[in-house]
Image 1 (cartoon, rainbow, N blue to C red):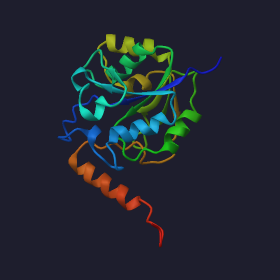
Image 2: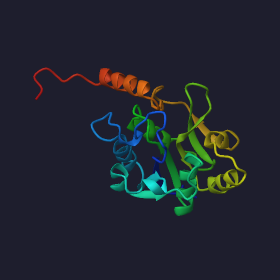
Image 3: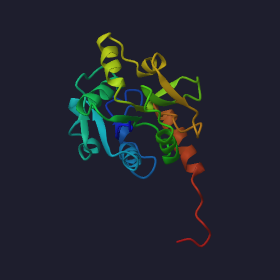
Length: 206
């Protein structure tokens, strides 16, 4: 049996409380981070959407992109995962947080290449604690029942769901790829690191 089609979902429904400004609108690569992540996923997935809260639908950085609106706002990222699975129940979802400025096409391609469609999900192991990274992971259609049950039990943590499920785990190809940015201090550090790692222009180029 062939694997289900792969759709992409960028989680952009957070309140960005610690950052003090909308993380989806921050620019690390010459465009809003949400647009940059959307472009990355669109090269890999048949369709790509942005997960938003009902009150975010008309915000400029989100309004220009295809959306899936949370049906249960206020319970964190799992609300976006659940809404996507209810909208398109027969596809697999590559779920991606919008605040991963070090992410690369190589990391996403490796995830898709090593997808195990017989498991509930395929995820990278955190380089910090070895546990599943649920917000750069492929969630199979078979996970929908588990997600629904998880929410019904009053549970909200997608990482704990994957820990307690039949999840395929991969080693990261880049140890910084899934480092997220939540505070102004982390923002400054990330921009410095990205700038310093950018390739220098060739002599005589231009």
